[in-house]
Amino acid sequence: MPLFICAGCSMRIERSMAAYWREKGKLLCSTCLDRQEMSLKTSDDDKKK
Ligand SMILES: [Zn+2]
Image (cartoon, rainbow, N blue to C red; front, side, top):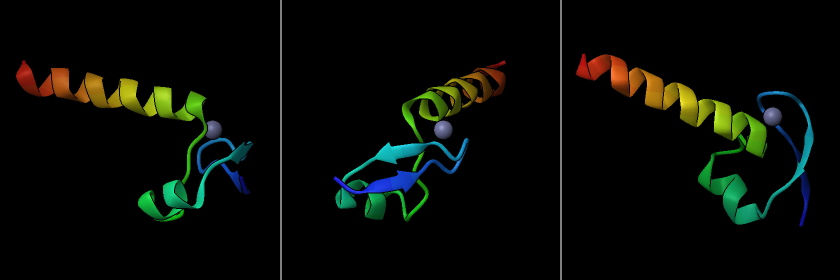
């Protein structure tokens, strides 16, 4: 698989071209994905309050 640069922390990550196109060239490593998901969940919680 080709190497890409994480859009969050510039770490080199291996992703498929399918994932690259799905994310429109903005790929995140698993650490940044976890962080993003956590902030998304947090903002969802905020909306419920
Ligand atoms: Zn990252």
